[in-house]
Amino acid sequence: MAKISTRELFDEYFESLGKTESYIKKIRSQVDRQEVYEYEKKIGKQFIDMDADELFDMMLTFNGNRNLKNAEYSVTYSSWTQISSRYRDIFNFYIDHYEIIKNPFYDKRMKGTEVYKRLAKNKEPFTIEKMEEIIGNLK
Image (cartoon, rainbow, N blue to C red):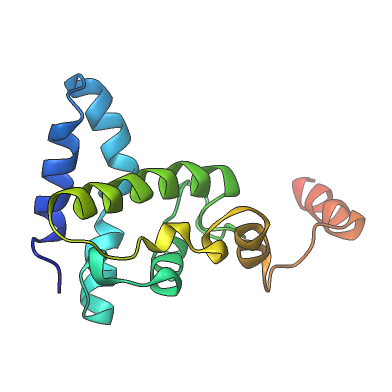
């Protein structure tokens, strides 16, 4: 069980960075999201207590572009890289300040081609037929 709440952890982590308020606001919005708290309630665990699979599933709930309601990917690979890097740092902050736990963002399933494969799983490939369909819908 986490020693502090997720909100408190995020507050302390971002305060420790010693950066400008505008910088903090920009990067915090990538990781301190409503989806995190909703997912915590859904699975009954705090962020810091989640394993690699739970964190991956949580991040799949992130909608990077709210204008694309039916987007194939809820989070892009480049967004995944930025967000997971920040979460890795937040876990390391918790480890340094509260207790030693395993950081799930060092799990091989949370890096590189493994993430790419998991993000693409069950997604329809973009084909020439799909492109023609899209062009046809523009008419």
